[in-house]
Length: 202
Image (cartoon, rainbow, N blue to C red; front, top):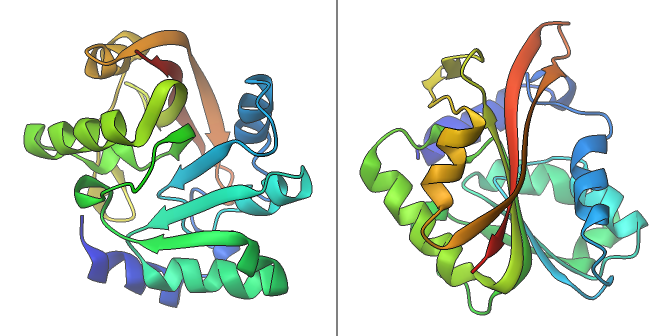
């Protein structure tokens, strides 16, 4: 992952103009709420950038939130938006493939970070971190571009995943709970095909 690239993106592009922007992350919120965990559940948003998910989860009463992103600029932007509420969140600047969790999470949320890992070595490192970072019985929810989705994002190549292909990537240490394909509408009005899956840590 290229930290310089992502810092430049967040320093030069307004939040509402990037393709992944969501004014309210309804799908992610609904998915997390559907797990039925308590507000004390430990949750990490991997590649969260300045997503509004953390705002929504704070509004819902979640109290153990971590946002991880490779871009310090992205996290600083999110902190400014949250104001005093930023102190209620743990912020981690790190490449997810080299991150070392200090304790396992109940929920691991990743909307569109995993598909930037385009080599087998990067994927293997991510899977190892996820295995270590999610407790037994914990939930991993991940979204990637689908087979008919974009081949590049923010000028970088991505990997596309069908539901079965994505499930196979995680099958060694996770049990599939649900997969589906859907569309995200970008601020410019374009439609992007996504695959979303939820897994339970074995």
